[in-house]
Length: 174
Length: 109
Ligand SMILES: [Cu+2]
Image (cartoon, rainbow over the protein chains, first blue to last red):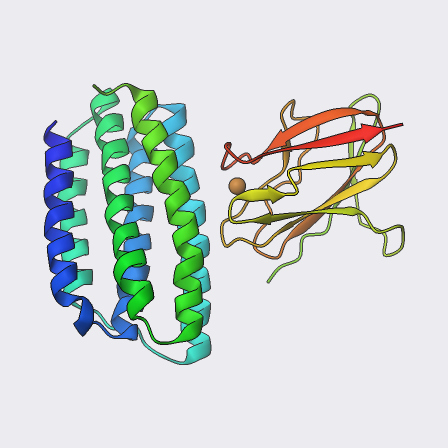
């Protein structure tokens, strides 16, 4: 329950922050935050591969690395093509800080406790990111190729959210 | 964009033989992989014909026989693979990375 509470707290804090900052974010900040969100999930996945012995959890983590890397490579290609530099911003910094705290918490766990905490965090994290990408980033962004990229990325992230939910249920964390 | 071109012959013994895809030949049945789905999910070909899978997603995918007798290997965005089916039968397959993605190749005589 502790993990769910923390995830919920992060979600609420992040959502509130997002709503507040949304109309102020420009395209370059949105690009930065979307990219950062992917990198954070890749880092969680590497931690899972280092700690977990559960085949399902490991397969999920490998998929996160594979898919988020592919999306971020595409994002990098687009940024290069548009000759722009993404801008760090409050939302990116909030995400990075929240992820560092969560990693510290996960690193104190092992076995099933780790698997459950990782799985629940993946579900909560994808839910929050997807709500933000769909509800804020895509409607706000003005450059069409970036909007397209975010829309396609969202398809991937939603599949991850569903997959994470199955993983949480499959682990029977209670 | 990297194109992966591959031909795998799935023979009666289940042997898998990989070779370069010849430039000629009849146009294969195409299965597009888009938004985490095989389109169409079910295709029917005759023995000796081929199926071409093309991935349109950012996420890499595979088309992998449920009995693991054949596999496209990883297809990046824009990547494609061709597999020839020589033996009549029903071949359910899935994506090894996203197992909820499912399809069927039916091979008739
Ligand atoms: Cu897949």
